Image 1: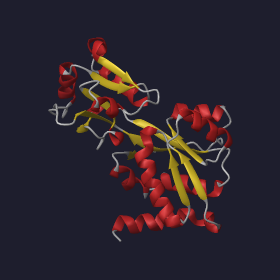
Image 2: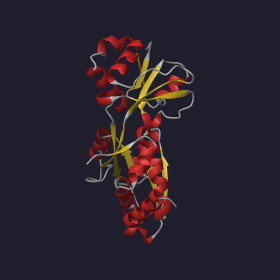
Image 3: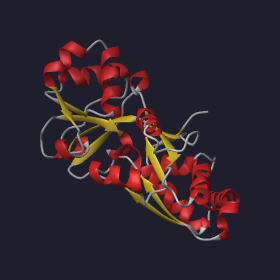
Length: 252
C-alpha cells in the first residue's frame, strides 16, 4: 500500500465515521463531463467505507424518472443544472457542493498530424488553419466559444464550427467518424477516446474549465452515507484521484 492509498484509506475511514452503522447502497447520477472523476471517487469511497456505490450516466428520460422517484442519492452537474434541480424541489437545499474542475483539451482523428497548441498564439494559429472545428452545445462548448471570443476569432471561425450535443455523444465520437478536423472538449473525456489522438490541453487563459458540483437528492433514502461521500469528494484525499483523470479539485 503506497502513501496515497494509505492516506486515502485513513481519510475515508474518518469521513465515513458515523455513516457506518450499516452498509448503504448509494446511486450517483453523473453527467458526461465529470463521469471519469466521479467513477474514481466512487471506487475509492466504496473500497474503504464499506458502502456500495453505483455511478450511472442516465439518458434524459431515465434521469428525470430517477430524480423524481428514485432510486438515487447524489447527482452531479454544472452550477446551472444544480440550480434548476433545486428550484424543482429535487435537490436538498444547501447540499450543492463544488468538487471538481475539468479543463479543455484538443484532439484530432487517430493518426492525423498533431498541431501546435503549446502557447495561446500557437493555438490561435491552429484554429485559423483548421478546416473544421467541433465542440459541444454544453458547458465545454460555451467555454470554448468564450476562449475563441477572447482571441477575437468569433466571426472568422463561425463558418467552420460544427456543434455537437443533445445527448448524442461526446465530441470525440463525431471527430473519430470524420465530421470535423479538430475537436475541443473537456480533457477528461477526450484522453484515450477511440479513434482519436489527444493533442493536449488548451493553453493559458483561453482554457476556461467547466465546474461540477455534487448534491443530495430529496428522494435519497441513504442520506448519512450520501453526505459522507460528499465530504470525501471535497477532501484532500480526493485531489490525486481527480488528477489521475485530468481533473482538478474545485478551488476554495
